[in-house]
Image (cartoon, rainbow, N blue to C red; front, side, top):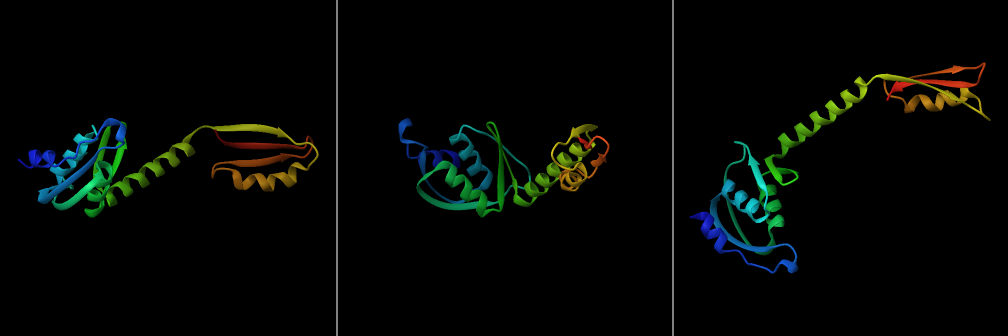
Length: 159
């Protein structure tokens, strides 16, 4: 019933007119139903967990569907991650925690890579002086040594 009511409120536009603009006027509608409507309008697949629930009241006139989608998410402290044509909706706090976990995992993977040693011959400068400038650029596992005899930097670090 709600879906038919919402769909009847749509303002159709020609394909050349840009993003579809909609007008919606709903009172105490189920949040998931409204999100599903936006997914239908954007030809997207929607994934929403049990944490996404509630009611929404909105009156929007002549706005793009994606703008309306963002406003509804923001009003419920929700966020969306899009991968190709799949949109995942979850609380902002949960999305932030997951992003931090991904960042840590990526950093751990970078540090777990095998070590590589490179010999860098230095001309027109002292390798000992350059070693101090190279050291801050290395990962925590990286080392730099100097072969004074050949004026060469010996740098060992992850790939």
